Length: 111
Image (cartoon, rainbow, N blue to C red; front, side, top):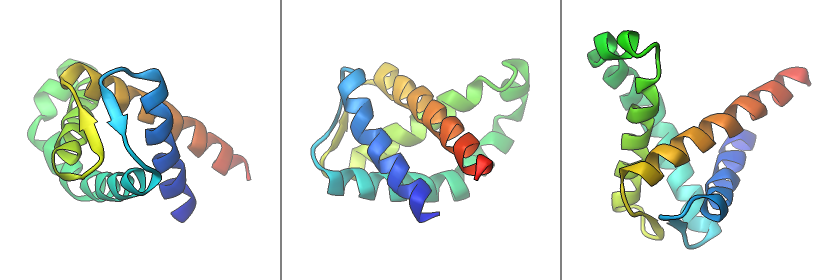
């Protein structure tokens, strides 16, 4: 759990290099954002997916990226040191974090 948290924080820092319109000022801000994002993904995301189930099924699950982007945008609104300039950068960060999470899960499953 701690390893995934650290990897997500590093992924947030790495995303600033690839995605314009997304900034994380420090490693501390990335750690706090990763913690809050993880808590929101564990508590709020399942409820949002359930509420938007028809749209999620209609888009074959792609709407979950929109939900994740909304959560990332929400986290950036109150975590000092994390800023997003719009919804498109938030969506790109959501896709980037999904890719990092998929790769991380694959490597941790191998061990």
